Image (spheres, rainbow, N blue to C red):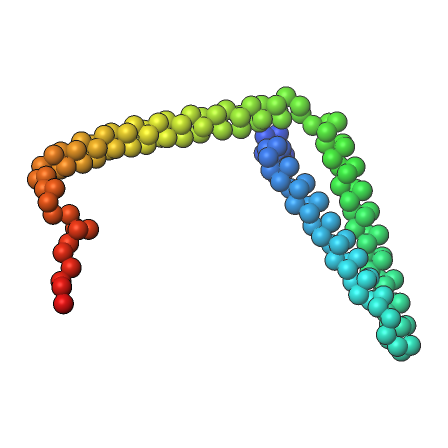
Amino acid sequence: MASAPSRGARIKPAADVRADYTRRIDELINAMAKAFQEIVQAAEVRDEISDARAEYQIEVEAANVAQQCEGLLRLISELKVACIAQDVSGMRQDAQQVTATLQNEIKAINRLLDGVGDQTRALLGDLEQHFYHCQSMLPVDDSAHPDDAAEPQS
């Protein structure tokens, strides 16, 4: 005889539950939109022979829209029950854990950015020193400028 699963094994984390509900809502809304699009396409007036087939297709798609709406209402009902009966302290702990994780990531990223800024300042200082050192080593010759090169006379 199999033993009943433990309480922790049955309960999904709040993030998984939210993702599941979001996925289900998206699927229902997309199915409703597709069925409505099919209704609009079938409603196009053509000739009398295709009208009977189009009417039947409209009825089928309208039934699909109604079915998707019922599914959406069931999902809303599930969400209401989940909000009422859900372990609020567990959800709060999940939210606090996610917040703490994100805060730690923010601190790590800020430390990395501070390190990059320090390295950039140091490299710019070295580059500036090298520039002034190289500039001071160049001979100063005011008589020959590249722009003042003599043009050959014909």
